[in-house]
Amino acid sequence: MEFRDLKKQYQTLKADIDRAMTDVATSAHFIMGAPVKELEQQLAEYVGVKHCLSCANGTDALTLALKALGIGKGDAVFVPDFTFFSTAEVVSLEGATPVFVDVDPRTFNMDPKSLEEAVRCVLDQMTLRPKAVIAVDLFGLPANYPAIREIAKKEGLYIIEDGAQGFGGYVRRPKADTGGFEIQRACSFGDISTTSFFPAKPLGCYGDGGAVFTNNDQWAELIESYRVHGKGSFKYDNVRIGLNSRLDTLQAAILQVKFKAFKEYELTEVNKAADYYSQLINGMTKFIKKEIQITTPYIPNNYTSSWAQYTIQLSVPSGNGTFNRQALQAKLKAKGVPSMVYYPTPMSKQTAFKEVHGYVLTPNAQRLSDCVLSLPMHPYITREEIRFVAESLISSL
Image 1 (tube, rainbow, N blue to C red):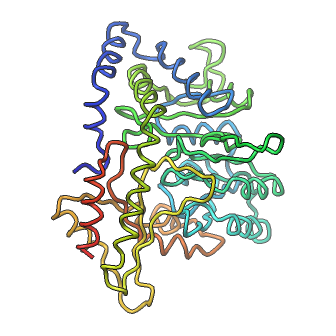
Image 2 (cartoon, helix red, strand yellow; image 1 turned 45 degrees about the vertical axis):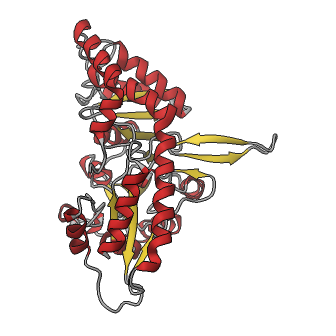
Image 3 (cartoon, rainbow, N blue to C red; image 1 turned 90 degrees about the horizontal axis):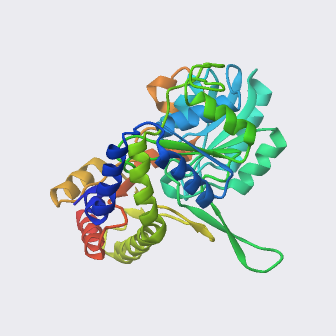
């Protein structure tokens, strides 16, 4: 069994993907060929923003966003303590200081109350300038942007949406005038938003890739320049120090094929898979020891996840004893079930950030790092496979 079955996806889309790759090879336009601009237009329209600018990877996408906003030395950027390393790494690379914020224990996303506390601590105790917040759509679920936006507006902060795992997720919002609903998609919630096309992401290519989204014309122009060595009016007119960060044509062509499948059925199928997982696991918990508690993922009303991961929490509520996650993973592996831990160490505990001292306590991030476990999840997983995973989990416990 594959954790995220890219082989099955390729076999399903093989004819179209092979044709797309052959067309690029035939054209020999390997860098910034026509599929790149076509993909950017398709993604911008889907997300609902004016500009989509592709780049080499999701980390560069965040870097480009920070550069466009002029963030640097002396600036404080608020980052969730429970996320992938690059979210905070890019802040330090620009000379700014990441300030770690706790997360909501149900959604895994940034806790607005902790954000507010962190901003107050920086203003009261430090010489840093609060400049921006990077909210992460962890495991595919959009963060609580209405609450984050309210704090950002009050404190004068930019919002950067790290949608590396969130592409395809959305929120249904009621329309006051008609009584119906409108959909706002991930990568449209920030002043600048980013995503990653790493192969295992909800929309992934066959290598590295990323993109930046914004409605701001000036920022889009800056990012256009920064991603190609800070170019000006033409290739050899360099007006600023930039990056070499372009999405190559081959990846763009592959992404066009996969994006079509993503819109037509993959997003729907992965949500069906998540629902079935939760139904089975919640129904089977009566068969495990009462000392062990399983918490399945929580999705708020009117939210839809793109399910980059299906992550459960395993705990011993009574506090009598500890839960051996490593032993459980070994048992699952012996049954042929892969599992992963995202993430075993909070940002504030990473060796690279030992000189960066957090300004608020992050107990939820600390606890989640000890109790999360991600199970196989992708649009092509069958109900039989899901049942096998759920039964293997329960029997192993």
